[in-house]
Image 1 (cartoon, one colour):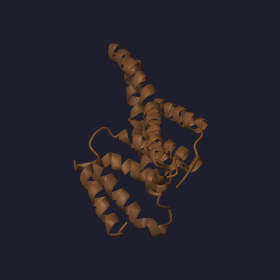
Image 2: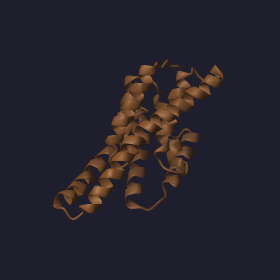
Image 3: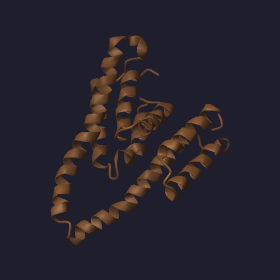
Image 4: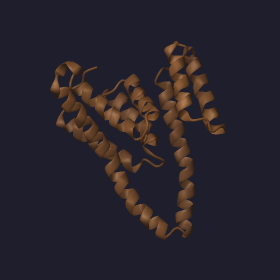
Amino acid sequence: MSTILSATDWLGLLTNFMALSLLAVGGAITTVPDMHRTLVNQHQWLTDSQFNAAIAIAQAAPGPNVLFVALMGWQVGLNAASGWAAGWQVWASALLGVLVSMLGILLPSTTLTFVASRWAHQNREWRAVRAFKQGLAPVVVALLMATGWILTTAQGTSVTHWPIWLLTTLVAILVWRTQLHLLWLLGAGAVLGWFNLI
């Protein structure tokens, strides 16, 4: 996949991720649906498989799960440099993608979290503060469900893809009802994919 990104495109990516950063209630993973809309549907800077791979690799790797944003930026940069044949420019472009995406997703939310958490802790007994915290819970759940929907439908919504829908439902139940570590589920999904069962 090859795309050409102008300076305006990079600036648009930065401002889009900065806006999403302020909406990342419950973590960066809750912004996945809008990232998919922007990166895959609107601009075609990533394919569905590249988008899903960035999330899967980051979730399986140790460290903060926000690293999926860096992987998306890395992949956008690779695509903008026309692939590995471009020489050193591909490294520069990929690193620019990481820098732009991580700066965009981290700077606003980090600043807001620092200021707001200090204020909320000082006023934690206020009824409005407690109500606000409780009101955010269903928003986070809905955003996580939307993320699951986006990742599942990336492979298609026809009946022929019923194994993916079945696997998604089973994994959701296992995560909800057990303490099974996510790495076991990711590993099981990888094995099923290796044998073309999903």
